[in-house]
Image 1 (cartoon, rainbow, N blue to C red):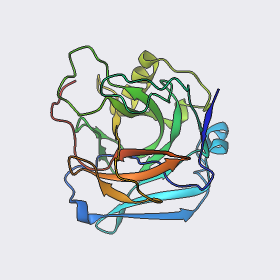
Image 2: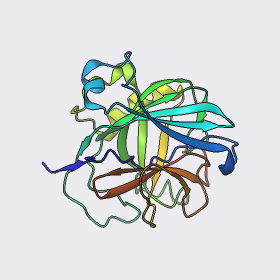
Image 3: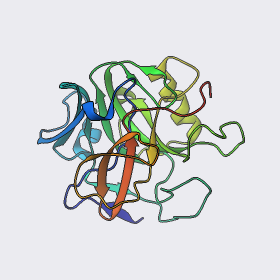
Image 4: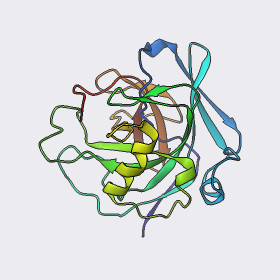
Length: 220
């Protein structure tokens, strides 16, 4: 099974959504700090000791820790609206600590706490058309219920566990967008629809998680 290596510890472009913020109010700081002690040990051991802190108006909003390597299927592919087919459904992409209530890409509130980030794809079933430009996302799972990075989750399992984080019939997601311009190191940059995104790399793979904004449609 091929792997994508983060040998230089450059950050993955993590696109989160922080509701009702201006792009100019977000700051990024990368510091040497081990993952939180409250995580399951196997998850903690898989993460690098670098904390990526996103602040809004000088106050910490979210914190990320990323694994040094990510398992990839190697399948690639050209599915419409999918940019990161290297990842299998449920691939472990790190953790996030929400310091305050955060709004996901469906503009649904998620309570402060620790969550794992698992890769998923918006269904191509006709019910989600027009919600976002791309189908890639990470889904938030309560960290205490996700104990092993290598656990193979199917999409129904991911949805069911994530609903425990949202307290609604819908899972909590962070949209993943491609960033077409080459970005060096960890930065917050606008995606193609001007939503602030946090840049992270694993090897030559550059990915983005939306820090602000949400999809066009709600209720899915």
